[in-house]
Image 1 (cartoon, helix red, strand yellow):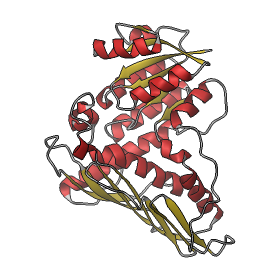
Image 2 (cartoon, one colour):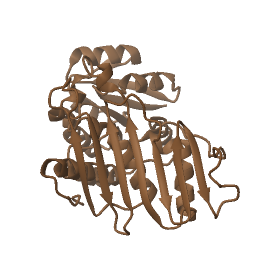
Image 3 (spheres, rainbow, N blue to C red):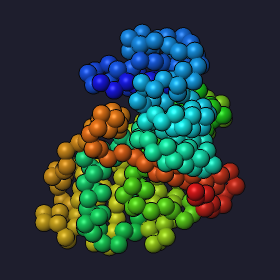
Length: 334
């Protein structure tokens, strides 16, 4: 049985991760830390674990194999680097960093330590996203000219961040607002599909309801890739519907989602005429968090690399900078 520690309990996904940890017979959570003692005590009770006064107690405990970092984003830098230096495998909730600088610094520390890393990009495991990745690699789209991905919900409209998760709507702590929070998932899918970084980006990011002060609630990003492909991503907390989550267009193929159904056209794939929903899809992969726990237990799984996570922070930083000065920006690379 592998021993794990929960380092920070602030993220909105923490309750779901706690349930998953409790359900795993191959995992024992032995320690919980959070700067908010009440929050630490609550989660420790659910995990039948004990609280520690400082993260140092976790770094120094050689019996602990891995850590799950669900702290506020502005605490990631110190916690991630210290955990890596202590030789702990890491699951770190997204986004990895505030910026290119701290993202690449964390990625370098993780690489140097040689530990496992994973972050919460669960969308890679969805059958439709896996299918598009496979077809892109197979050349079913020909030359890809444009991609669009949208990840939106009504979080601001529903007051999701009014109480326990209020820090997530404070860019000084979270590093971003709605565009970065949800947009990083769309960004991950686009970059994962194409396998290359954009050479320049721009964006328009807006405050809409002012429910969370000056925290952004909606945005559109534009990414230009070295081969001329253009991608756009939409993300926001002020949407009442999101029926078209993506489209991929190329010189020899096209795919889009409409109300959860995939329509696929390609002259290279038999039956792909785009007239009816395409249902021949791969099986769903386990959630990104489960993949990490499997990997800690020695199972071969496909994880997000720390360099991939850092690149997403760098690209998102460039889009936020562009929204401020209304100019194209080149993401800062390692």
